[in-house]
Image (cartoon, rainbow, N blue to C red; front, side, top):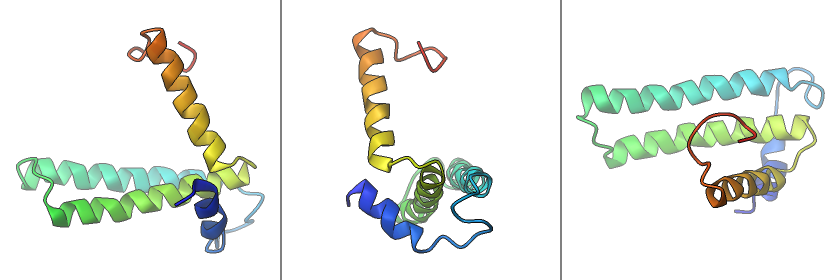
Amino acid sequence: MDLNLYQHKSRETALYPNVGKNPIYPTLGLVGEAGEVADKVKKVLRDNGGVFDEKVKESVKYELGDVLWYISQLATELELDLEDVAKANLDKLSNRAKRNKISGSGDYR
């Protein structure tokens, strides 16, 4: 699916206070959903010997969808297109790889 199409379609389900003027709500939702992904992965280590079986993968897929939804809403609140966000990320990583700067820390390395 095209990322901008997803962004547009997902906006139809955005029901939160001050939609269109509220980047805080999707930011907090994003953090919460990312935590749910991390919790599911943690439980794979604790309860499943680190094995991601099909049931776990399906569960993580749904949580990742929720993460994507909140990313989409935050991008929309900030008037950013998801495709532009994705392209900028790939460009940044490609540039780092060319300069052998993938590892390390800092946005502008």
